[in-house]
Length: 214
Image 1: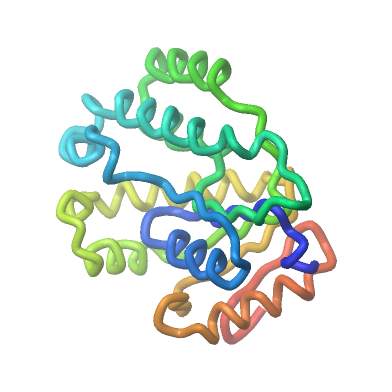
Image 2: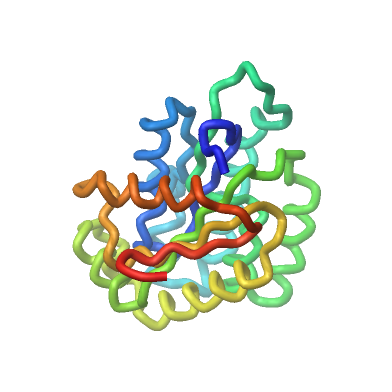
């Protein structure tokens, strides 16, 4: 795969997997526009981690509105526009909703999602980062965001399992599954180089990358 020809690349993964760091590095290398999740602009997020049942719905709907607004400009990608790298996949948004909402709340969310979801192009490549829960917990605590320190390990476990199930069935775009446990895309540029080399060698619709082995 020639990554330079990709117009729309998505990096995904659970909290702490390194998706924003990798998306930022790819944006620089590919001279691409970047679309990042905006957790700091969600006024319900900190309260969600303190009381998930109470604040799940407003948190989820706020993120949905944010992501839909960010993606509206991608309705028509053309050859003369800079490529775009995003650290979220809107099609995966219901994964969080199903995990966090009651049945009645999810029914409401689903109606809003169906009416709000913009017509966006299918990504040319999705990079899914996964790591053991212990690694996710350690990274979340290390980066020092106050409200994230309250995230229960049990929640991260459920979230990682939900990601695994989702991407096990994902076939909408070429998918590179990356074990990011031993990768540091910020402090070790070689790790980005190795991943790009593996992407360049992609021949099928689904490939795996694990530093030090296949």
